[in-house]
Image (cartoon, rainbow over all chains, first blue to last red; front, side):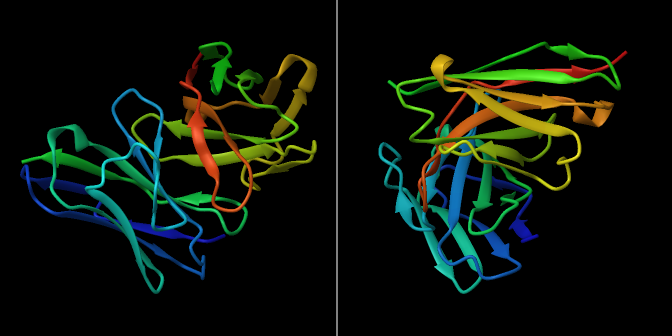
Length: 107
Length: 118
């Protein structure tokens, strides 16, 4: 199975900060990487697909990038509404596997 | 308008079978695959299995011996059955949809909380 190592597990940042969350894949997954945002008590929401494609309706302060086997979700300027858990998912190979999640809070 | 809605019992006793239904609208089960994903309380997401658009199924090997997914296209419903439930099966169960390539999990159900307890 492909392991997705997500870091950090939790993150506290100030409003306006640039925030980056990373997932490292244990095998080549190409660009089959999706990022989800999940607010407390809610279902996951797709934010980025194909590693770099922004979902319709997602604020442009969110972006996705890839460097080798490292995939990053970046928020360019943190807003209060961004407080949530973030999850990555690889979908190149079954079983599909998620990262362990990152809890993002406001400092 | 695309919608997925999970339904099922909130409480299941240990060793019993969980039965969940995902009712969809706004798209066809013969055009989209439906996946089941679960989330133990306070933990991460786990892919469980899928019903492909063509009726094929695939399962997470960690659950395969206990899990069965089926569908009724006339009712726009996908069913999950998992037997021999234990307390660590407690969590929220979601259904979501996918087509191909990168286009997966764009819509999710609201989730159903399942507690395994005697």
